Image (cartoon, rainbow over all chains, first blue to last red; front, top):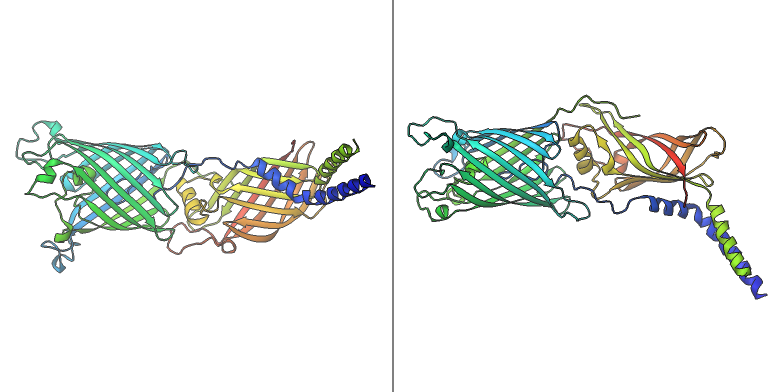
Length: 310
Length: 181
């Protein structure tokens, strides 16, 4: 009797199980097939290759060209600003035209020219590490090496030795995308001016500095960006005339699909790190801050489009 | 002894009822959207699918990040701005094929699957048409359907230069192999 009961129960439960197996078996097979914890590289820590002052860890992809126009107007307030100069819009303390071309997805060659010191810069930007979704690599790292040249004529003999026109800039950028909205980066750098700049007795040729910058997205396409750099320089700390200040900036970034615009305020007059790390003599509280903008546009030179919609 | 036999039978019966499963780990899923500036196209070869040929149960899932675009920038915008693949990493369909088809006989069977399409975290009940083609030793499923952006809360902003269209055409093509546990 008991045996029969148990066997009946078994049969009934089997039938019930079999019906459920319909959808659950599909689910369980699906679960078995899908790679749950496949680490993916984190994309788009930043929308652009530079924030306001500092470059980001992002590189331009292979065969893409990034064209940049960066502008810093004159002082908003203080003696050089006010209504007479339309709050600085009449003047430009620096204009930068730059190109970045992707040799590989993670390696760019960069070239640009600043109004400030007429500086020409040529460099490489190499994305060494990508942050991964499973945090096995918790941050992205990019290295920058560039050389700067001041080509202008002078009446003094400081440029008799041609190498005095050259500067070298090396930077390691470490960034982390904390969420889809929030990314931060820090960037230690080393700047070597063969001729100390500005040329004042006692100024150093070598400057180490540390930059920190971040972005907080407000909407999918608009974010707030802040940027700060501190040069570790005894000369700059101690100098009374001129006085030096840490370059810093804040602004908004707008992406419109292909273009990225930045509108910002900054006390730095110069756009290239070779210039602003060595020579930022403007003080926020004296009205010596300026409106600036960055426009970037990416052009894609990858060969002809073949339809993939089959 | 008897019990053991029963338990074995029970297990066996379950397998029978579960029917035959066919699977694919490289379903090809392509997207097409006609846009004013340039048409937007992408393809993924990383769809995962399960088809139960006895019950007609069918399931698909595809990682959004696996879609490859010609232009890397477009791919980035697709993930970041439109599909938000950080939050919604996969698109999926789970449903049941309504028509009978026989994988032991060669032929072409037009079918419809009724189920739930989950794109951008928004679930929609859909009836999706497709075709099952049985050849010597392959089972292929193809399908073509349209996804309306607004049905899945995919926002198309007014201030972008690369506008995507209101609707995205999707093509699916899968070759299944018999699933060995």
